[in-house]
Amino acid sequence: MPQKLKIDSEIEEVPSSSKHNFQVVGVGASAGGLEAFKNLLEAIPKDSGMAYVLVQHLSPKHESNLTQILSRIAKIPVQEIKDDLKIFPDNIYVLPSDKVLSTTDGVLKLTSRQSIKTHLVIDIFFTSLAVVW
Image (cartoon, rainbow, N blue to C red):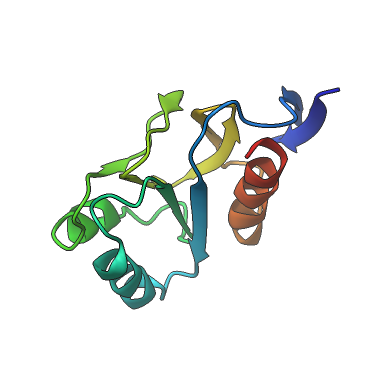
């Protein structure tokens, strides 16, 4: 039976597990986590077979250059997440500012962060990731 996940005061039905045959690695960091992200990306090989999703605590008003910075370091593609973005292995996905991220089976979903406290952004994504993947 599918589980329910609360996002932005909406209840969303989430599949109980992923049908995909690769791992998704979720990484959360505070606003000061840039160096940790850089170190991680330097260690990711070209062919790990995993997808990586990076979620950083930032002020909703802060415009992030994280995607551009990490693209220079990574050996695999780095892209900012757009709503309903399908996840593929050997890719890195970065949360844009002022958004909340969740995942359904094989897809990254964005919602507005207006009613979410800053410290919950990572928790919400990790909860959906654990339920689905």
